[in-house]
Amino acid sequence: MHRNTLAIAAALTLVVTGSAAAQQPERMGANQPTGAGAGQAKALEFAGGRIFQATGFGNTFMVTTKAGNVIIDTSLPMNAARHKALLRAVSTGPIKDIILTHSHGDHTGGVSSWKEPGTHVIGQANEVEFRNYQTRLEGFFVARNAAQYNATAGIGRPGSANANPGNYAAPPLADVLFDKEYKFRLGDLTFDCLSMPGETPDMLNVWIPELKALFIGDNYYASFPNMYTLRGTLTRPALNYVQSIDKVLALKPEIVLPSHGVPIVGAENVRRVLTQYRDAILYVHDATVRGMNEGKDVFTLMKTVKLPPELAVGEGYGAISWSVRGIYEGYAGWFDGDPATMYATAPAEADGELVRIAGGAGPVAARAESLVATDPALALRLTSAALKADPKNPAALAARKHALETLLTASKNSNESGWLHAGLNQVEAAAK
Image (cartoon, rainbow, N blue to C red; front, top):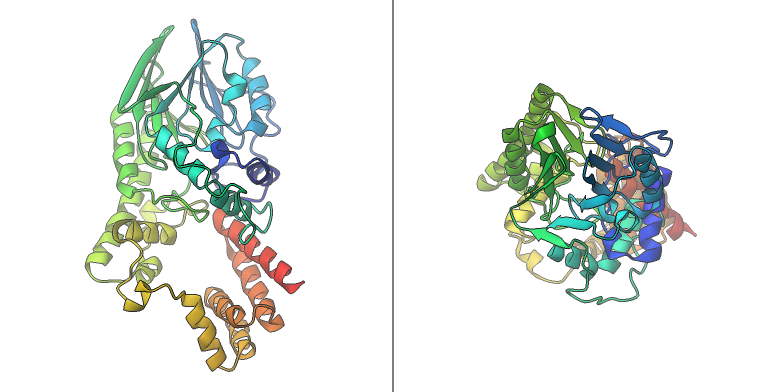
């Protein structure tokens, strides 16, 4: 995502609170404008005035019925008051249900603001373990999110003071949990909650047949998805996305409302966009599996697997190469077949020894600097080796900064940009 105010504020929220409910915000620049709804004057209206959207660092939706209202996703705590004001300007009816498409913090952060006496919070059953997982690794995610969203240098800083928060320590969130499907009727509308694993194992979609409307959560972005996200996550199986999108297409919705960005409107447009998205994911999956079966290593596949033009969905959020590695290692794990990988000696230790053999950090830094214009990624890798041998070497730090800045200038991916900024923060800190 882009380094807008909301992104930095979100990361700061994670650093300050360490809240398990906010451990894993998901965002993308290509599908959500900088400022993300901060200047929104009134709620967006869809489906003939039955669905309303407050836009932000995660959208909040309100569906109105004669018997009360249903809220779908609640954004981050910092957006809750603004979203509530926008949506309450439309209807002050009772909030009967809150449906959470999944339990990332940018969807659950406003639950307490919306919950009234008698309000039910609905989630998919895998929410319980997914929230426990987020709490279990609380300190890890605090540090990683801080780096990715550039609130601090992040990597290398301590995470949570409580290094073992407990394996099953997440507080309850939803009071209605279901496995495959949970359907209820409110007023004149049917709300069909369907298990749709994709970005998370607890992802659900909401189908309102009377409106031909489908709330898809984070299983669709206007960019290739993150099957592995750089801040750290369980690998997200590609075939889960494919199967869930197939189920959406079978419903033939006329409007699809993602939790980030703007809706896809029109039955044919929905069919075209989601079919392309599904086929792009399947293409990358199948090309990776084929390469694995042909004996190709993960780095070769990261370089060579590319989408054909008709399936190019953009890489403003997820990246094909990261997804290839996520698929590869999701299937095969970390061992690459090299016996050296079996042992606890880190590759960087060998890099440091090679740098010393080559004459020290100076010559390696000079070689890295000479490569920045033609291969900045290789130059960056060389500076990692040089700094392993001599962490304060001025030439290596300068070459690293040059490589990072060159990669940042070329980057069109929000997550990549976040980590390049984090790398620059580290260089600045090391140079002091």
